[in-house]
Amino acid sequence: MTERVVLKLGGSVITDKSGGCTIDHARLREIAEVLAAHREIALVLVHGAGSCGHPEARRYRVDEGLGRDNLPGVYHTHAAVSRLNAAVVEALREAGIEAIGIHPLCLALAEDGRLVSFETRQIAGMADHGIVPVLHGDVVMDTLRGSCIVSGDQVVARLAFALGSRRVGLATDVAGVLRGGSVIPRIDREILESLDVGGSAKTDVTGGMRGKIAELLILADAGIDSEIFHVSQIGRFLDGTDHGGTVITRKE
Image (tube, rainbow, N blue to C red):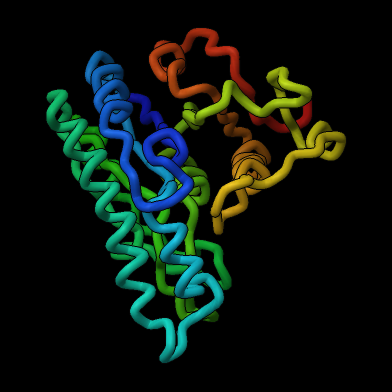
């Protein structure tokens, strides 16, 4: 079986996170060209919401649960992230990649903010046949809250487990996890305790870098390393060469 690779594009990479669902189509075209040069890889792509979804989720408080006053938030949040997903898929297809959008709202269920059900067999089948499934952070139904936001990072971790992936990459707008302006090459749970890793300075209902590392450490506990690197290094990640980023791993 061809190795399945899970790659996430950070929301800040493909949108202007200050708001307005401003999609960076030029960046998407650049990324698509890089991915098109690596068609031999069974790729599963995930992207963050950026400015397409976070403002709506915050405005309607969909992460706090559902009531009569915020029911429209499920639609408006999902519609925003779906617009971004459509733009990502379009850029990939224009580059010759057989991509298709997959919405977590339609196949996932959460309990108190954590995924408890997420059908992935069709995603594995697509990747194995050369189709690139494109998933994203999304609003999903929650058995306790009514609804919640599931981050792209949580989706990445769930996919890596389910698909048996040993290569997981997160392309961001920074070179890796930084300390004093320098990239930390390796993080495990013990190292994390000594770090001051904050959340995003912009609107983000999913926890920023701290939330990202927390999700990836769950993977690391299971023996699955992940890598955080600058978006310009996607090609190097896919080639398996040094990208100068951060590896999230379990303690040796």
